[in-house]
Image (cartoon, rainbow, N blue to C red; front, side, top):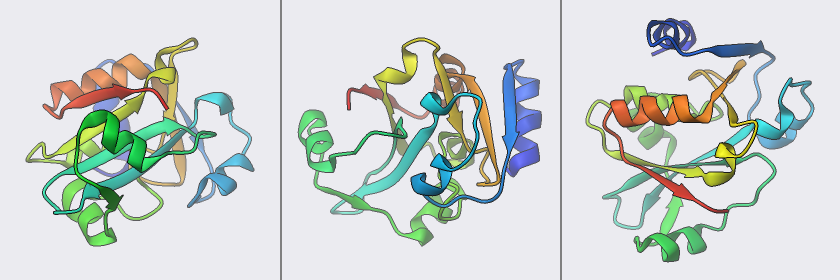
Length: 162
């Protein structure tokens, strides 16, 4: 799904959302320079795989947090993790580098990617800001709505504390 298909999809599911259009951003430093309505709710997304390339994971955390892949591995009893390739990102989520988002799960036709979401996104105000499969906009929605979409799509979600 492209950006406009994501908007239509969210509308079809009766999910309330807000859109912030912006220039293309490729990292959190660039994101921090933007004027967002909910800066504390911006998500950082990492697409990783295990060392055998059998399992793929999308890790979504608050933008100001550092992610310790070894800690995630240990706490979730999974194999060693490293960043997936751009080819894997396109194959599994239909996304390009810089556009990684949990909404890309809607492109995972085989439901192979496991999603880790930072528990802090559920704390008030309970909003998450993610790309709509394109890094020129950010969609703001209730975290519970996003999690509901992922579950409805039949991908596994695990809440983690970072």
